[in-house]
Image (tube, rainbow, N blue to C red; front, top):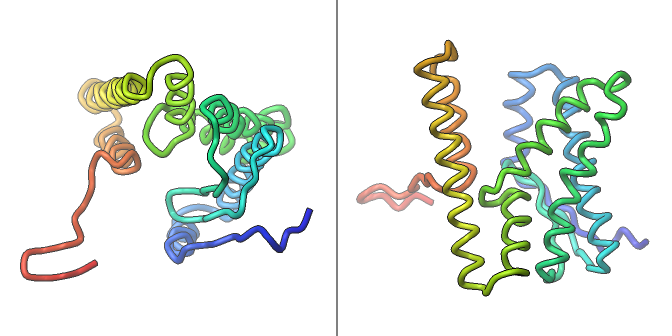
Length: 196
């Protein structure tokens, strides 16, 4: 395998995220999170290899890792999207030896299986829908499932805030989920200013 042809791009935002994480979390947890992320991405790469799909590079940014690959069929999309969270659960077998990595891997796998935009779960749902339904209906079904998931998470967050003793923490997590899924966007432009 010629590694020179694969391009790895790291954004400056990722480095900023690592600096902030270094201020907030112990180094062992940061390394565990990065290791779990690498195992997750290796799952995607193994699936791409099995499906005989070539990839050209990896982009690392604050929202996560993105593998640049050729177009996938809906079936290959399901296989490749599900492979990351499934392979990401392997550290659970070694939880007694590497407990931090196992915890991070489990959280990443469960969160990545949510059917929200830019997560693996959304790609799995979309791929399954496109193999069964027409393109228009598949897109509609995927969108309905995403909104139903967001509503369930929202109801759970409001319930935990009002009834539970969690304070505003669940609502903060809900805001992060909405921002990550692209449902809340912040404009960089103000009236009279052209800031990008």
